[in-house]
Image (cartoon, rainbow, N blue to C red; front, side, top):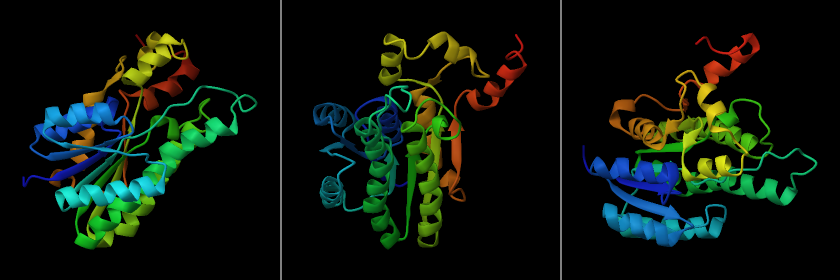
Length: 254
C-alpha cells in the first residue's frame, strides 16, 4: 500500500501506543497527539514519526494542532481517536459534576473535535478513514455514569459522521474494547476498584484483551480490506458481552 499519514490521539501510551506501533510496522507515517508531550516525543523518535502536544477537549488546541499536522505532512489519511480517561465507580450522590464533565470533555467532546478538524479535511480531499475508540461500557449498564454515556455517545457520533461524510469517501467506524491490559487497568487493580480474576472469568475466552489485539482491529478498519465497512461498532472484548448474560444461569460452564 502507499505510505499513509496516520494521526493518533492519545498515542503516547496504552491502546494509542499499540496502534502507533502497528501502523508504523505497516510502513505508515504516524503523528502522535497527546497531552503528555515528552512521552509522545519519545515514542515518535522510536517510530520515526512526529509528536504534537494537544488538549483534545479544547477546540483552539485541536484546531492549532490540526493545522500543524497538515502543515507538516500535507494530508491525513487515517485518524484514530484513542485519547480518553477513565472514571471512578461512584454512585451519583458522590460523583461530582466536575468529574462527570472532565470525563465527558475528553472522551466525547474530544472525539468530536478531532473528528471535525481532520474529517472535514478528508472529506474535502475525497478520501480517509476514521476509527474511534469507544468501549463495551458504552454498550451495557454499569456503575460508570459519565464514562459509559460518553462512550455510548462516541458510538452514536461515529454512525452520524459515517453518514455525513460517506458520500465524500470518508469511512468512520468504532472499536469497543473490553477490559484491556493497559497501565490504566493496572491502576484499577492496584486500587482494588477492579478484580483481575473476576474480569478474566467473566469473558468467554477467560482472559483480558491485549492492547495489540485492539490495534489489529483498528488497522484492519483503516485498511483497504475494510473498504466497504463504515458506521460499524466492532467489540474486541474476548467475549465479555456474550458471556456476562450467563451469570443469570450460574455462569459459564467449565
